[in-house]
Length: 339
Image 1 (cartoon, rainbow, N blue to C red):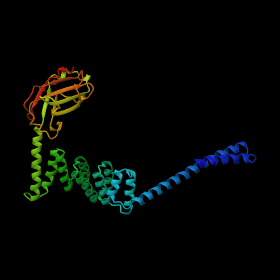
Image 2 (cartoon, rainbow, N blue to C red):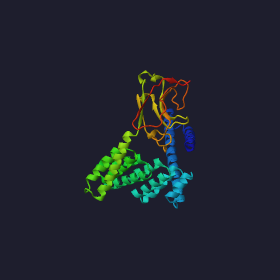
Image 3 (cartoon, one colour):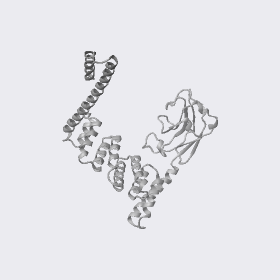
Image 4 (cartoon, rainbow, N blue to C red):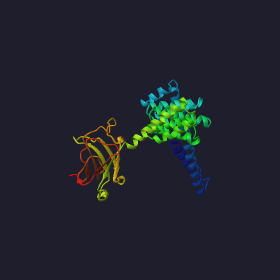
């Protein structure tokens, strides 16, 4: 812009110097046109010089990093020696020479190890777009397997479903879907996936027997899950002024006092006359839901929405029990106020 300013000054002087050559209207038109030309030219020059600087900077960075492998690059990123953008620029430059699915897959795995989930997704997204449909499906299942090994089962399932979308009978995808579904406690999905695989095998073969064992295990867990809950029923639900509150908290508390054993928080519009609680609601995941003794159930309605009870909250409690019974319903009335 400094160049543009000097150019405008020079044009103004030139317009004055040659004032006798042009009429006043011509001088104004020439001056305005020249100013616009100067500004546009200066901006184009600025952009070109800026782009050149960026390329030179990228070249210097590439030269300084060329001896580092991917692990070293990730370590430098973690130590803030280079930025995430510089990391990806360097990887792209390297892959210009050998741009392959394997390279991007390796990079994605390293990013996962460095807890860079979003960047790993970008790398995996590039990896699964190489080759024909068979190669792409193979890459997607490799990504799914990587996520399963890291216990990211939902992410694994998303890649598996992409394969099954194009080939619903893909055996490798069905096998992995069953594994991911079991970890997500979706036993019916696991059973459905593995049942088809068994149908493709010789009856009583080792392969069929191994898959059938997994199906039997899924059915057993499904049956256990069907009873793995307790319910709390609110007797006076129709008479509770729900409109005055924002949150509801269902709690299982030790009779001796202290922190709750299990908690389930609900927006007030999600509250129903019967609330179900399962081991997933435990405060401490290693606690045995069914072995806790001397406890009671409580439901509290909160005006502020905070977990800590406050003046004006309404609540109800059951009597004390020696332990929980699977699939049992416990009743209470919300008829007490926090003072």
